[in-house]
View (cartoon, rainbow, N blue to C red):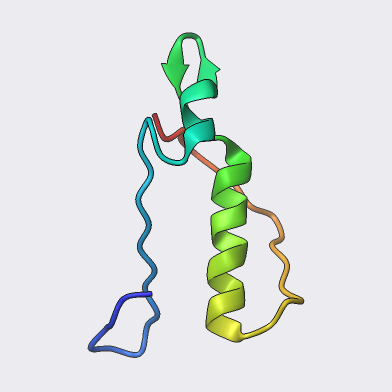
Length: 68
């Protein structure tokens, strides 16, 4: 979680071809692609951190473009 001058909450994370390790193995047509489950897990972790609750859920998530 990053500090913000405003009232919004901002989270930052890093992902690369070697970290986390599973990313390197997830390929589509020969290109490394971040799995959709990684997006969802990250969103859920941020929501739990922000709202302080284990009982959060995501609904109607749309991923419009793959992160290569």
